[in-house]
Each structure stands twice: as C-alpha cells, then as structure tokens.
Image 1 (spheres, one colour):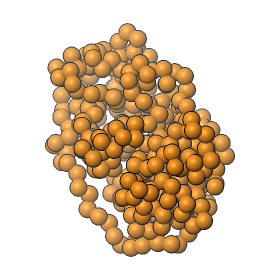
Image 2 (cartoon, each protein chain N blue to C red):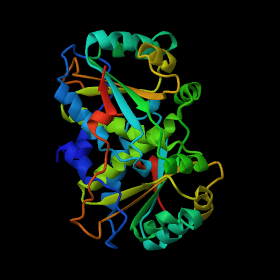
Image 3 (tube, helix red, strand yellow):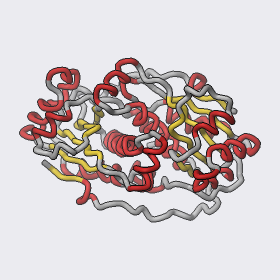
Length: 179
Length: 179
C-alpha cells in the first residue's frame, strides 16, 4: 500500500469488535514502534500490553473514569497499551532541557504512530490517548510513582470494517509556505 | 512496500546529493504531514520550506552555527523545512496543561515522521533536528519572537543510494511486557 494511502486509512477507532487480536499481530505492531527513530537514539519507551478482557477492563476503568470518561469506550477494545516514557539518554535530556523541549514526548508519539500505521496496514484500528488518569493507572498496575505515562493506545478490529471517516484537515496552502 | 520495510528504510540522512528535489515531491511529503493525526485534531503545525541553495544556506547557518554545529551538515541538503509549532485547540491546550504534557510536541513529531516516511518511500532521505538555534532562525526569517520552532527537517537524495545503516535498537523483550 502506498504510504499516503496508509495514512488515509488510519483513523481514531472508537468502536471495537470483540474479536481478539492474535499475539503475533500485536508483536508486529510493537516491532514497528521498536524501530522508530528517537532523539540521540534514546528509545525512551516501553509498552505494557493488556490483551484480555480481564486485563483491559480494570485498566480502562482506572485510566478513563470520572473526568476522563470521554475515553471510556476503550474498555471495549481487545488490546490496551500503556506507554511508559522512559528516561532519555543524557545528551538528549540535556539538549532538550537547554532548548525547553521535551524530546522524549516527540519520541514516544512517533513510536505510537508507528504502531497505529502498522495496525492500519493489518486491518486493525487504534486510538491514542493523552487524556488519562495517570495516577490511577499506576495504582492499578502497581507501578512506582516515578513512572511517567504520557500516552496509552487502544487496538482492535473495527466493528464496521467499511467505515472510514472523512479527514478534516486544513488545506496545504494554509500550512506551508515556500521561502 | 510493507510498512515495516518502509520503517526499516528510513534513517537519518546526513550526506546529501546536490540533486534538487522537485516541488511536487516536496508537496507529496507535506501532504502526508497534513493528514497526520493530532490531539483534538488541532493540527498545530505549519511548514516553511527552503528549497534552493540561496535559501537553505543562510537558514542552515543561522540554525546550526556555534554550539549547534553538529547539525551543520544540513547546509548541504537541497531542502530544509522549519516546522512552526502553532497553538493547539483550546481543549487540547487545556487538557495538556492539566496533564502536564505538551500535546503539540507529540503532534508535530508525528507530522514530521510522516514527512520522513513519505520521503523514504520516494527514495529521499531526511533528518529531524530538535537541536537548533531557534532565536537565530527567527531572526533570519524575520519571524515574530512569539513563534515557536521545536523542529526542523532536512530533505534530499542520498549521496550513496545503497547505504543503509544498521538499526541499533533495544530488543522487543526489553521494551514490552504483557500484563
């Protein structure tokens, strides 16, 4: 598939079929994340994967309860991934601090987008979440309070395989200028 | 091309051929960025494109002089893109502030990775830069001081078309755990 067609095919899936995702399929998506670029090749990510309803449901309840309930639909996804933002290499952390830019946020976002694009190629849908109850997730998973969770991601097959929402985007003229 | 093969093909290109990049090719890469996902569909990006040596050289000198000179190789790239981080939608900005996570950084990183992957598919190489002299770039391009430049990107054909550096990455076992 042409890359731009894959980009067009990816959308934020919110209605999941209950059909489970086979482990090798999940692994293939994580492999695409593993190979992602990062500042100073820091690879500041790790992934905790819930892939059974018994694991997904309490995790989704912790992450998307209360004021975060706009994302509660994720409880119906067969797979839920917690992305841990790990420490960047010293050079990237120092450079980012000097520039006032958290490079690790860029890095994990790119890795997650690799998951989403790989999933789309395999006929799966995903949704990325930045709006989540980090504290409750750490409690649910018994993670140290120093753990940083900036993103989560749901994954599964779409309930409606034909559905493809139109992309609402600014025009190219609005976002680029040749110098 | 399978997505994972495209991911394997993309690397940070530092040795550019002087062969120019045709405008429709640049536009195709920007189109892939335009279609990228973002928090609350904010699309908090715009792209200033230098595509002639007359525009690239002074821009590279501003961005990558002095303590930023590890990226001075970008002066030889036929295309240099300045990514402006625009304001996110109110919901994304507020949510990000509450969470202590700058969603717009994730958004522009994903958009830039779309450029890099689209470029790789077209036989081009790219390199992303977070380490740049933002103040000098703004002065060179006569941009308001409130402008935010978190990323730049070089683009062009590789001097050595056959070269593909091995990817040094942690193993999958090191970065993922099933709950």
